[in-house]
Length: 245
Length: 300
Image (cartoon, rainbow over all chains, first blue to last red; front, side):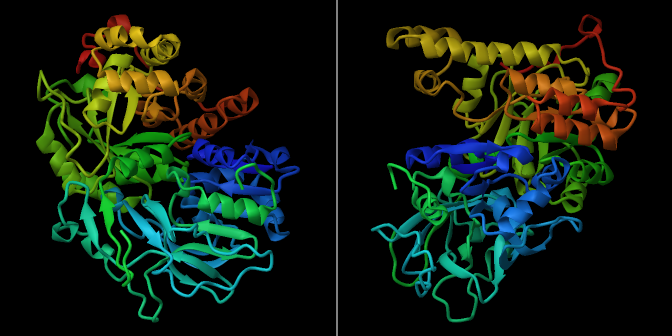
């Protein structure tokens, strides 16, 4: 059974993704809901709101204990912010679970007008990371592509040595939906598109999907696409059964 | 699509990312704020977004005159004060105000009946915009017309600035009741529904099949207490806009926090009771029969 934190955000889309794989899910709203879970999802939403509600419901501390004890967790977008060890541009009092050793910058790609869809490629994601001890590798299905939707997304600005980067965003090329080249847009945030190349010789740009131990964090929203590759990967990490796995 | 050098196209402004932001706000509270300080209070209380305004609807109603888009200086000041999404209102049909709001990089544009309409025949064509739009609706036909024009979120209109939830309930029940009836209609009847709703048949079919709107349905217009928020969430709203209800109450910080918790735990009366306790005076509110103007009648 995979629990989905259901305090705020896009809970239904995660439930549907697991249903497509034949994996059972339940909603987590209070302490007792943590019982008997094989894994938990922290969905997309507003990370500041989720932090406050986790505290007020008394879920933060027991969930933190579970995660530190190895409960598999998938965090998407705001969920990744909650898993990171360091948050830039967050609220000063924002607590996180700190189970993925990385620094994320909230809204690191700019405001909503810069939210984007793209395709992640195996070819631009650098050297495949070593397979984790549980034998679960990277999310690539046969085509080596993964559709990704970034909505006011956190930007992973650095990762620690124990983090496997499973997918990276490719280098910059922005096109507006109406065909207009956004690089022609003037505005205070245009420069936020830049700086994608990390200068460390890695093939692509920023990390988009990261794993450390039993924690999987994505800066994008796999639940908003038709691809189930990320949810399949997580279901395998959690060791649950499903007809579609 | 595929490429060898690691470059890949990014597309901004597609409907998927517009509706996606609306989805991320589900289960949350969006608060009207008129200063950067109020915006911080809202963020501290757990709001998922703020609506930057010069005057809250209760004051617009009291002052009269033409209500327009806010001064960009106010909007930018609020954008700089908070990290959560910032929304702002444009007049119905006033696409130039909407262009200005997009240039300011607001995260959502509310084409709102709370402001004085600029066009008596047409709403804004919202498709060419990169920034998503939310529009008000009083019934299913109006909701689907706005979606056909490109709205990425629908909110009930209610009757803004009154602190009286009765109209929001009426509009939600109308929209959700008709959605339920649509799911029971056969394929031939759907054409009759499209005609009577004044909505495109494609969208009518989509709603009949899914049993919900193709974009999130939020509630606005008259929500003043935690129990109001619980009520509209139980009726089927997916999130709540609170306008005058927060900063016209005796204790804005506590009221804001209480409405956030009551929205997240809308189906747990114990929690709603706990957060409602000792909040002090709610906004005074108005009886609808005493109103000289119904804002909800603006737009079509």
